[in-house]
Amino acid sequence: MSLLRPDLRRTRPAYPVLLLVAAVLAGCGTDEPVAGPVWDGPSTVATGDQPATPTAPAGSPSGTPAPSGTPSATPDAAALRRVFPVRAGNVAYHPTHSGYPGTDIFADCGEPVVAVTDGTVLEVSRVDRFRKNGPLGPYNGGLSVSLLGDDGVRYYGSHLSAVAPGIEAGARVRSGQQLGEVGRTGNANNVCHLHFGLSPKCTGHDDWWIRRGVVWPAKYLDSWRKKGNRSPVSAVTAWEREHGCPRAPRGSSGAG
Image (tube, rainbow, N blue to C red):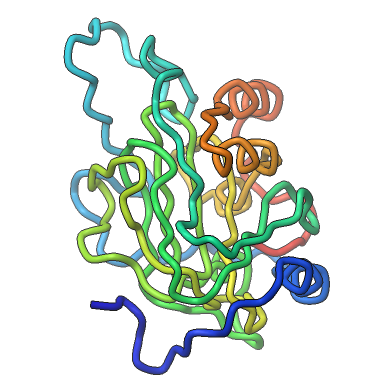
């Protein structure tokens, strides 16, 4: 059964070059920062301030946990399987993004959005609160899901048309498991696509300006699309080592 809402229509496939033109002309909008979003249905297992502790692989040695919010690879993290976040044949994306590191992955509305790797769901937004004349910033993503991978990296996808049943904060997911469907909620400007971001998990405050993406994803997407397994752990760790967890966005570019 489709997860799409009755009022959402599936668009016809378009050639990648046309999709990239759409990325340049439409993309994600800009805004001024405001107060953080209200996430729907957070569980007691994990919230925006208290992420759940991922289950350690069987046989893993125990030790002192790393500080919250710091990507830290376990001995098995390098072997984690990673997959392309949209399960579709007709997709296109650009290596850059306006305003901040991120990628818009263009595909038909309704195509499955999947977990890049094994991990724990951090945040889920099931309500589109974006309004052109209303609060912006954290609401630009519309329906969205962020996942804390077992590798310590946060994987974020937004503009979804629907979130899959059972995808709630604290839920464990496996690589390739469906999280939702490509859509055009939030400030997607009526263009079906998935905004995709890589970042560390920063705790203690809403951090939409970090969650939307701090490391350019294209080279990792290139690898995963070709069935490779390139890891973003070192890049995300290096970014956090240099910047920490800024408590305010830099500039006024929009959140995807």
